[in-house]
Length: 229
Image (cartoon, rainbow, N blue to C red):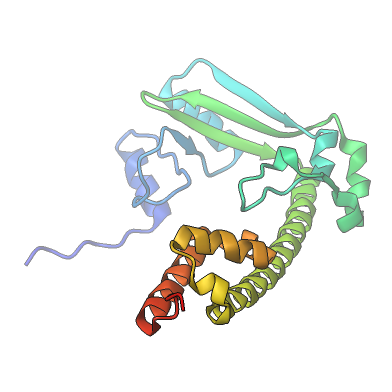
């Protein structure tokens, strides 16, 4: 058996690295995560500066996120492939009235990202304005509520459609008592006849419709109902 690994506190590990004349830089993520090129630094801004100096990178890139008017509107996507750009946007202030107070920050920088180049990837540090964190909390709550309501509406609509489809297929099954239907020579003709008689079949899934007609066709053949008298 191999020797058991000794658990070590993070700060103690950092001290061991410093004693070895190395500079520790704690970053977000798990050792089990896939390797990524960007690493988010954990610690204070001063700690980040120390790490960048230790790396020897002469340039730190700064990117910013500005609060725009568009952030106060939300257009949820659709499960049927309709993109958010094709749906009517919703005023988030109507969902979360507290968001209105943040309109005074429109045009202001909300978040800074500092990036220092590593041999591969970057070492990043994020600075969030306090009002931005509050805004994003409200924004997330409002958009979640819209998404939940939309999902519930779609679920009800889907359930209603499934009920209509079941009724249509039941009506199709009753056509086995229609002498004109049972004498039709092909399943394709049966589908055309049934759809004309039962317009609701237009919205039924093609596979389900063909399967039901195939089932009816088999019953008609088995019972000899299609024979002309």
